[in-house]
Image 1 (cartoon, one colour):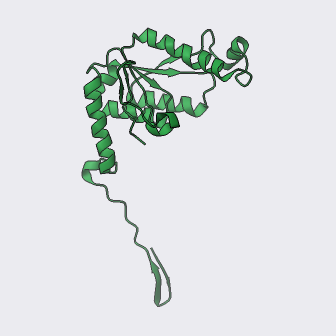
Image 2 (cartoon, rainbow, N blue to C red):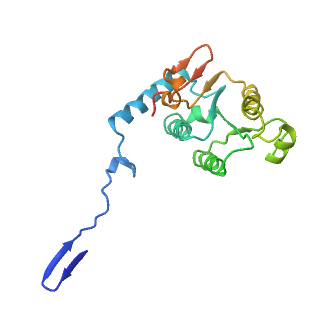
Image 3 (tube, rainbow, N blue to C red):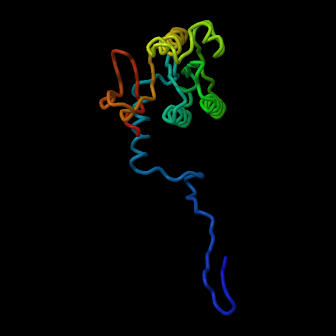
Length: 195
């Protein structure tokens, strides 16, 4: 593209499509720091999870880190992803964007989640009738009926041996130190160092 006045070029701009490295397949190459995290992730999964994913539960809230976990498992450990359970809790108070994200991830990676809801309810109106308005509930009571109890049911249904979380050390002050493997709980936090 050129801007000019008679006899004089004022500005010349050449537009080119961005170059893509043939090995990147449309994605930028990973930085050395990120590649190191992916390599560590692969090593940790190989060390702590059964190859078939049996009795493994991944607790997802459809956060970015959770979705990265699913993508990495799909790419590097498809058999384990296929055999494990993705567990999601519908608190009856999820944002529409969360449920849309969940549908997209489930569809893209061909892995449906086991969805659990608060006991004896199927929608927000039933929740309010059964438990009250979340704004009026004690936060501990809300957490128990909408998250903890449904999650306990899911773990029992899946016959959980190993729990995987998407928790990271940078998410909260109490997570400054987060073990990759919590032996007493049989919990794997493979995204702990991702930030």
